Image (tube, rainbow, N blue to C red):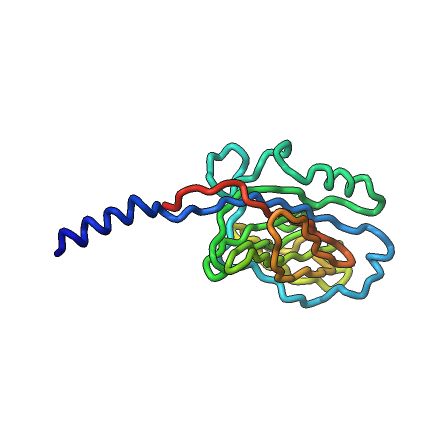
Length: 218
């Protein structure tokens, strides 16, 4: 009887190969609104709830050979026309435009991507935060970004920013500190292949997620 069970199991392995894991192309463009109207919006916070997810990674540089979470070359990005349009618009400043490939895990096991862009001040940037993509019965995006304004230390009260994972905390008395921070935190279902827009009066985010191919799961 055991021999029949073993033979049946072998047949199943041949007839039903390992579950195919879909690889996705992910691309984001974050931009700031540098206008008097945006600056006058009363949506800054002295104590916003800012934190990085525990399971987070930075994109590997192009050419690192990584199968996932490797930054794609600029000439392979699909939203270059949209980025060019934003750059030509008055009072709009592109903070970052990056793309990568990844497979999707369920929400509880998904890996977040470290996002930063704009001007760098000491160990911090104008744009900081993370983007997490996962799949349940649908594609889901968790956007967790914040936009910082910096000024000379001592001029106004400072906003305490979380340290970027993997960096050393600023020591001593820094010359510049974040004086205003606004956050964009949103969870949304995504339609594959559609361009999605996450809006805030002071900055915004464009996101595209589309399948690339299916590869055998390990």
